[in-house]
Image (spheres, rainbow, N blue to C red):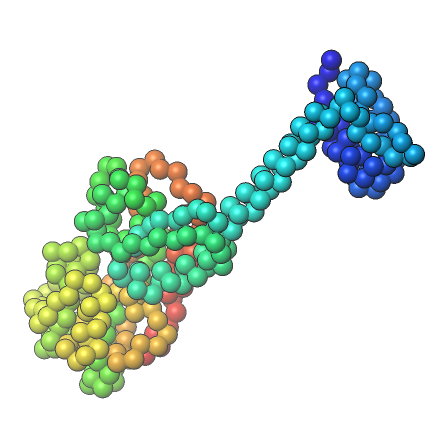
Length: 304
């Protein structure tokens, strides 16, 4: 006995649903004679009567009842598969776990995740905020799929890819005399109370680099661990600071003034993941959105 084909199953089901050859043909969008010939051929091939003809209707035969039960089960499975695919397309019952450096998490993450949410409205998102020293354990223990960082991670078990670069800007409290300048030099900041991050921290080292490159022996008057803390201290009039552009990438930031730094500077963003790990489509899409938003933030004009 030859195996039954998917096309034969499809036609048998159509006749089951509509009860007539003409109805099945309309349901499938084919000719009625073609349906009739295929049903007859299937019955002959299987040596089994599938339908009884009663007053012009095709009624499933008693002896073929188990066949029809299996066909119903097959199509129920197809329907369940379709529902699962639709749920997956929306991100339903799945999770995206990743982490970000504080400087990117402050404003850029919300922009990127707004795009992710628009594409996958039911996706559960778990965003962690990490310092660089916490990144290796987070990735190697697979607590999340990737991390967006402002420094490279030196570990053979970690892959690093640069996704954006920007400059440093000077942040001042509103009303500060230096706010009258269109751009600010590190030399303008020599006698100012400087707020920063510990230079032994990789991120902190990037913030003091312009001073060191120009031979300025700077001293912090106050330090914070995260970029958000530094900006908050400046907002409250406790000093001035150099900070990466991503950390202040918001249209309106009351209490502070942002000015370009005259000297050349560069701070990069990287996506890091466990070596060899295959990312989910959700993670790949999220990284694409981070890349896009970081590039936009690095080029848009400072609003204050």
